[in-house]
Image (cartoon, rainbow, N blue to C red; front, side):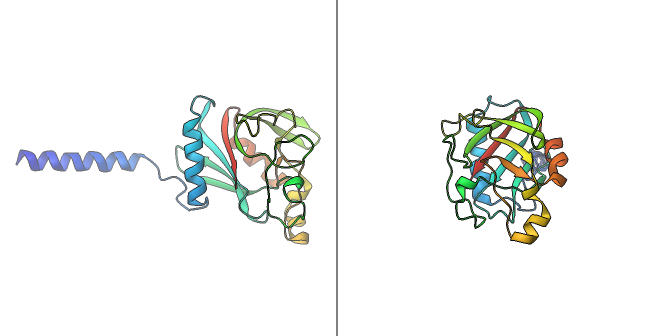
Length: 196
């Protein structure tokens, strides 16, 4: 009888522990392979970032007319999704698909890999957020001024007129309408993963 009670207690303990851990992305907004890759990349770089509650995933394997910038709350599992433009050097035929990544200065292409959000500033595009690349493939992101900002070519009317977003010089760009929501979720030290 003691064994049965111990077994039931163990089952309840396991069930309650599982209930406390939120399911990440319960709505399935992020492609499974991309979410798995991003979580592994984050785990491999533990200690490189300060904000442990949130991470950002940019999935450039999706077309620019789709939501592909994801802010994942690791405590609740909830995801906010936004459209995001990529670099013109990554999409020379401007068909809305990112063809390639590059971290070469002057390429106007989007770089890939792991980034850490840095300080906010006000520049040419208003409220913006600097990014520090922490991989060999993107270590010169700050020198290239690869940042997050809003711009007119990521607006709904541009998408309606052209069927895709415009292109940046390699920055991660979203609509002005989404800017405060995006930046409201991000603090300096947030892990950001860019992939395709």
